[in-house]
Image (cartoon, rainbow, N blue to C red; front, side, top):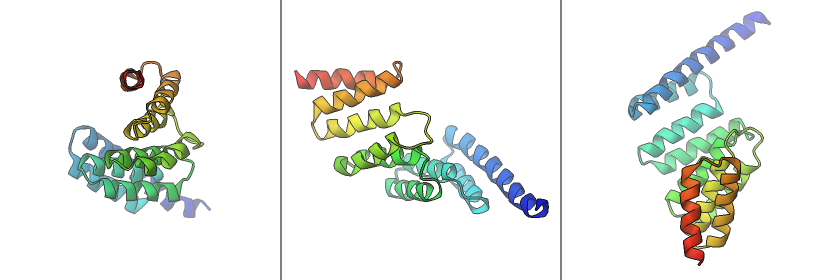
Length: 166
């Protein structure tokens, strides 16, 4: 069993090292290098995280359709990972496809593995604001703030939504 696990563990370790390098390049704005490293990580050992972050890189490059495809691949690998659901919703909002975004964001809220539930609440609010449903948007922004009271974008969006209601 150890002989079978060793090559697998070695591939995983190398893939995780490539993922970390990719993330560092992404955060430095070196998006082409980041994309290449994420792709190399995926080639060695596909993970939901690597596909999601590759998608995030593509979104920074303005390629939202490719970003969505990567997030869908992430969901195939790990349907409980919440980030790709939220990211697809955010990308659809950027494309002004608000009705399409809402189910993805709702799925993010029910994902079992997610550390930042305030993000899908915030994006859900953005989708409803895009549809000019400001009361519902305000409810979502308030949910985001209940989870993270210091999340300034939600506070700003809630103020904006309140002004449009009154």
